Length: 400
Image 1 (cartoon, one colour):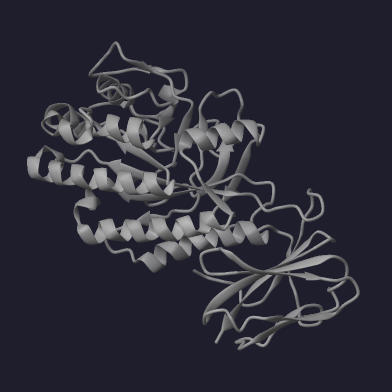
Image 2 (cartoon, rainbow, N blue to C red; image 1 turned 30 degrees about the vertical axis):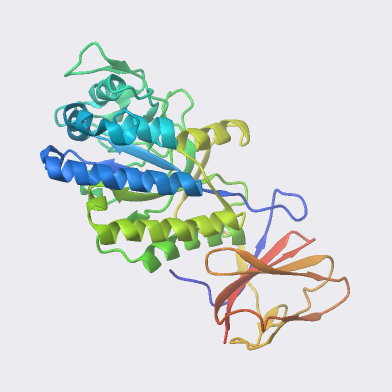
């Protein structure tokens, strides 16, 4: 993760004094792809055990999860799962995960054989409620049976020609082999594959942006993934991303990888780190249904579109002439000084997972304050200075 070494100043243009940065919504998302290891009974049963364990853990922590299934896995649930019903309340694994653990189920389809309505039919047949979310699309594909525009007004299946499905949202925005996927926050109505970023209210389907590409791979480290999550939250909290934005950040992994115990434990560690950020109040766990409801109500269904990594244009550097935090590294006392320290101000310190651990009020008329931080463990910390003049200054320091 790349952090600014200098502080920066952002002038808020549309909010009242002390306006709060928007919440970032977190959600785990998984796919089980159109692959055939699910046909192997030992692989299927081992994965089922991991799904039970992870579902219980997420439920206990309030962590949300959208599980998106392709036809091969769903057919194996139909064929194999009755053997294991006793461990999930006489329900198939997906129905148990949804009804007992609150995990949302969406269709996912590469559409080589089964198209989206066919996958929806399989989900319906095992007792799952009908999702209105397309679990992945090739957003700029203009040819073929699997073009997303076929679903704008609803589509009938190929394997199950009586099955009709009309979704409301599509998540992601992929490309073949994921070489140039969309990395956007927000919600909008894409006009067409060639004008996907053009908002057009005459089209029915809305794109649900899932933020930066944060995926847990077999080769990923916990530190790498947590740094990416923190980077999103930091950019929202510091004003580098628009303060009137709508931010959903998904954390993606492949369901089959859970069979590797090291990978499973990695998911748990990342979930715990993300949950610590949620506990600080700057993020919330929400499923796709919950987050779209939030967008439709609290955000009044306002179109928003922002690319991961793009920084607002009116961020300006702060020089030592008007603001400085020193010493850095610091031992026991952190000093904040500068000619911008006038009016009502608040200085907050956050740890690496976004928890607010110290807050100090700055009185009118002072140009320097010192904060005792000798009780803080050694490490890297971030600060945020918020003023009554609608200014936010942010940066980092090292505690020795």
